[in-house]
Image (cartoon, rainbow, N blue to C red):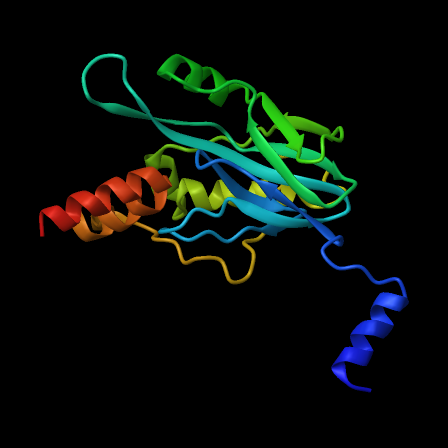
Length: 223
């Protein structure tokens, strides 16, 4: 049977294309951490703003990270939330958009949102979306606590958040092993904290996308 005949048979048998999954879209200030117990890999130089979800119930771990202009001067302040969970039911295909309930215009709004993320989840076809937002109890450690344990704050927190998205997870703080294939982390001990190269690598891992892009622009200009 040639390809055309196979395609015709599949269509005749009721198979449809483009209706098996939906796309969940987030803004630049959000970052995917995990979906249903699986880590979402991200790249230092590109923001992953969309993931594909099949129909059904899903738990997605997100974090809010942004650089917000300070009210006085030309400076910016980094604002970030603890990881939070989005429990969502996908009942049709198409694009689902996740956005802050209100447009964040200043530092006060950013800090308030980081403390308690309130979202709007919309579907392009206008259908209602069933979802719930849940804050986790995962806190970012200080650099000194992390160095004593040999883990970066991001690495240790991510282990717990990934576990929280797994089907049937009871609590948001359950421990889990690092997903295989995770990006290698810079672990600093002893004299490493005074080594400029190690410190640069460490803080690069902690920075959000905007901070990394700003740093790359600065580095290129000063080479």
